[in-house]
Amino acid sequence: MTIEGREATMDRAAARRTVLVTGGAGYIGSHAVLALRDAGWRVVVIDNLTTGFRWAVPDDVPLVEGDAGDGPLVTKTISDHDVFAVMHFAGSIIVPESVQNPLKYYANNTAQSRSLIEAALAANVSHFIFSSTAAVYGNPPTSLVDETSALQPINPYGMSKLMTEVMLRDVAAAHAMNYCALRYFNVAGADPECRAGQSTLGATHLIKVAVEVALGKRAQVAVFGTDFETRDGTGVRDYIHVSDLALAHVLALEELISAPTKSHVLNCGYGRGFSVLEVLDAVDRVTNSPIERKFVDRRAGDPALLVAQNKQIRAVLPWTPRYDDLDTIVRHALAWERHLSGQSATSALACAENSKAIEGEPHHV
Ligand SMILES: NC(=O)c1ccc[n+]([C@@H]2O[C@H](COP(=O)([O-])OP(=O)(O)OC[C@H]3O[C@@H](n4cnc5c(N)ncnc54)[C@H](O)[C@@H]3O)[C@@H](O)[C@H]2O)c1
Image (cartoon, rainbow, N blue to C red; front, side, top):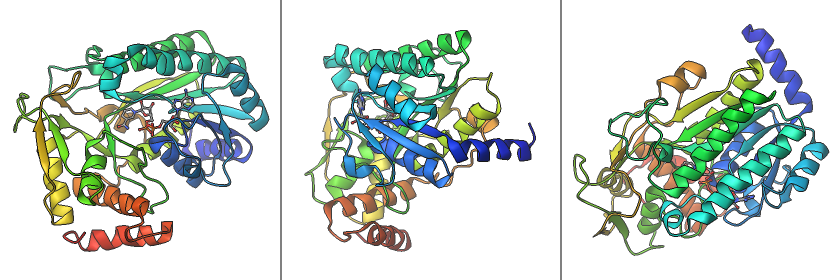
């Protein structure tokens, strides 16, 4: 299809139909809602608010409170809003918790996804985009992991996500629905305009925790394991800015629309890794104030190194990351954290200004 034809298709679709975003009140889902709206799509959110926040959904976006796996609720929502595509973010996301309570993950990630897919299929939803994870690769032997690498999750979280990928693969082969599974690496940062950010209470994400420490909300940041086979002994991850990730979802949707018989599995990362200590150094650099580090044992289920080979997403989607810079990711996370705490900003506008000010003055908290 030509670019003009593709744009015309998008315009027609955008004019009348809606994308259902499950988990749209959560961290990544709320950024996807913004990206979809910015691109002209109508959106409806289903979220049970277990870890999300009602206020994270913009006032002009309908929020249906309930489970993504509640078939009748999903069916009604699809019908009420003329939904033609689903972006499925809802899920449980804490790896150590999944090791301690695996059935919670198979229930909330796998079984709920199955019910959602079933309802979407019955309602003739055409396109499905799924939040998958690098955890499907487990502990890969190579430094750069691509989509053909062995799928060997080492924790129930990763397995619960892989099982959903498998369901989607089989459903797409049997029915008129295509899908894109996006395997996120480590998501961090916040909307550069400070319209959204990570607000999770008791979050375990390194950059989130580190900026909380920098603002005095926590005493110290734990470094889980210093004896990994990595350059400084700490775990190495590929940190991707949440707004670049949200954009990838919009582009994936456009791709699914323009080629409805094709499905995709795509890594979402920048293709370079930072160790825990390098991330903490970046936080110290941005705030010009060292945060306290506490060195503790490895967590169950943590691989040493996970970095994306991202050739595939760059080949399939016209995706050009805008925030591929660790200090920028940290600055945006810090600006959002200040916004949350009201330390120096009480409105989204003030927060955005704060974000710019931090960019201009990298060594001032
Ligand atoms: N944050 C990361 O670094 C990361 C990495 C890889 C994959 N992911 C995936 O991205 C997705 C979003 O993660 P996040 O970081 O935004 O987490 P989050 O906890 O902030 O968001 C999840 C949202 O889903 C909602 N939810 C959970 N279970 C639900 C259910 N059964 N029905 C309806 N709503 C439900 C929660 O209330 C919350 O709003 C998850 O599926 C996660 O597995 C996240």
